[in-house]
Length: 56
Image 1 (cartoon, rainbow, N blue to C red):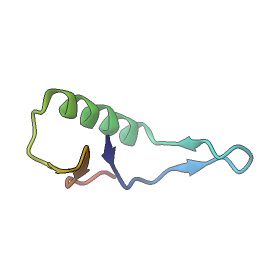
Image 2 (cartoon, one colour; image 1 turned 60 degrees about the vertical axis):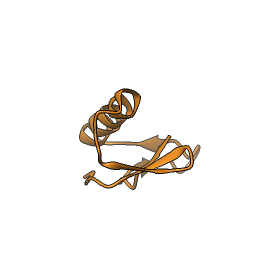
Image 3 (cartoon, rainbow, N blue to C red; image 1 turned 135 degrees about the horizontal axis):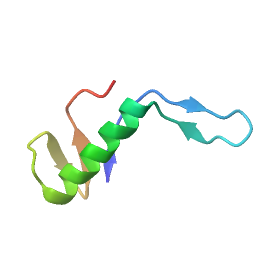
Image 4 (spheres, rainbow, N blue to C red; image 1 turned 180 degrees about the horizontal axis):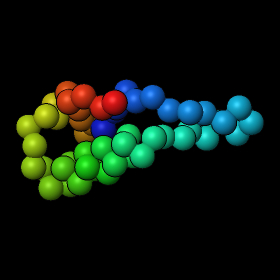
């Protein structure tokens, strides 16, 4: 699990979040990096990681 701060649109009726294509791509990259443990940009916090890179 990773905690990210990103901008998202939110549906006023159901609360579903909508992300830009760039944010979605970055989320997928981070997910892959976490699975492969190929980066040092994450600090473990229990079983959660804080991503210290920029997401725009």
